[in-house]
Image (cartoon, rainbow, N blue to C red; front, side, top):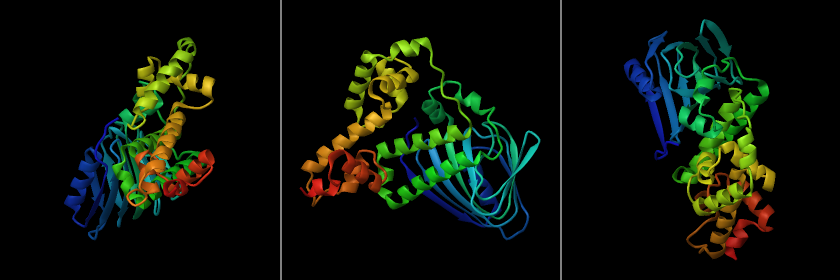
Length: 318
């Protein structure tokens, strides 16, 4: 997974040339913009998580955008106003509450964006391939449907992205935690794959045969040794010398859990040990939780209490 220092960026301009250059540079494609009045303003706030970027854009006029093709997957949620997108000769109208993929990777489209605000999530194809565990993910996305996603999936997407945006805003130090950023990026990638109707990889006979005790031991050893690092299912599977599907099967068959859930339990125990020995004058519960990859303080507290029977604050203050 591409790793960059997380950052936030803001852009606010009324200059059409600056706006055109900013959007073309930001989204890595050739754009053709046409605003319908002279008093035009665009504001853009981006939270950059490396392989995932969360964008909030607002603009003040009827804007026509021609997109030559994107090398990313972009999920759009109109917050106010409406967005009309034409791709492959099919025009679709999106309103607040809808969630849709802007276009398939590398496929041209045109967008008519009425005055209003949209939330975008921009995902690298390499991350989506890593999370799906399938080498053909990018090709599969080029056949994904482009209509508004079903209401249940749209609701799940909105809930997930709202949680992430709210948590990152309330915990600015989270942008400095590689474990938090990695987990957040994979969470959003998994949700995006669900929007596109991604099918879980099929299980082969080799996967079933490989999902044994030896695989589990190698995987657990790797997780224990690397729990302080941002690791993915693909990395754990490579260390265990099996496919990601076989790895998932091994954990489900023998422990009734997943590799990432097992890793979260390891990190929870590490956080517990740190809280036991930490100086409460120098450390905080939130700081230790973030260090071990827990973005939400309230969720960390609930999980900690369920596991250890006390609140983390009580452990810290002894």
